Length: 371
Picture 1 (cartoon, rainbow, N blue to C red):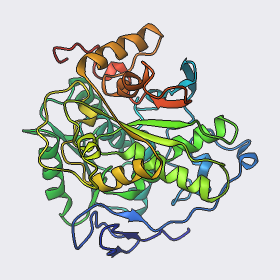
Picture 2 (cartoon, rainbow, N blue to C red):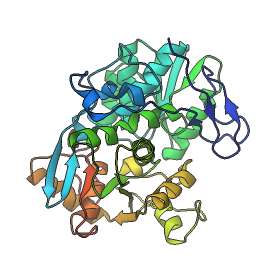
Picture 3 (cartoon, rainbow, N blue to C red):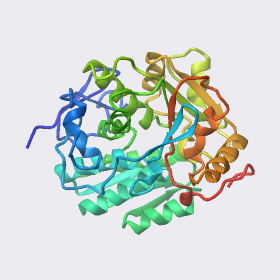
Picture 4 (cartoon, one colour):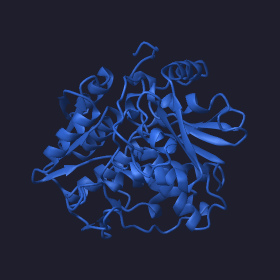
């Protein structure tokens, strides 16, 4: 079996050897990146391969495992002239988080820990619970109080143990990080563990394949912890470095106006978060992250690819969810944020793809009053 790559800290360069259960930089406790250089796979080589994200095996740091629920290969549909949606809510657990979760679960299966833990506002925890169930790995998911009941129900249905933590998303993360330091524990953090980003990058590889070896002028991603946007940035860098795209698309990040620490930093021209953002309640619970650990990387990626930050109000979220439902697409309130941001022409005449990240059945129909 091929050797796993080492991880390293992008801030201070500290290294973590492959196969370790360490989940953070041993020096600064920040998130890790992966020391991995993929072998390019050309478009023609993909014909006839397995119809899941594992068809991009050369681009991934793990060999294709037996562990799969058929994740990936979600369709792309046109929403408006030049604006397309990728329907990632049609994943096995009804959210894009399956892309990273299957890679984390495959890694955990290979490392053989005593337990797997995660923290989540819902979708990542659901995805990890499902893939751990598939891998026969015991799983505990820490979630903040106030998480959508349907998401809690789904996590429990997959057999994971739920730990509901008083407070917000940050409180759940702190509780999980404390538990993560216990011996024999694999912390399946979609924020800290770089293997998750290796899974989410397949979103762009699929677009590249489906669009015949090219990408749109812009990619738009909802950003809380930034796992989809950072995965997209990884894939764009890889495709461009391999000469498989002639031009890199601009990356646009979307936040709820109620919880927008990255947009505030962007407007200030800062390289990192500025001050203490005071979050307000938002329907976009999946991106309500006041202090994303990879903030510097997110801001750098948006700058690198000539994009920007867009924010949406609660009223815009409600209107966008109903608009999509009227087009036959029932998407959860977080998942409509990107369509809310661009549906009125914010990107001008550029072609763009927005992700519809989670199914409406997870949260129900939103209203501006909050729910």
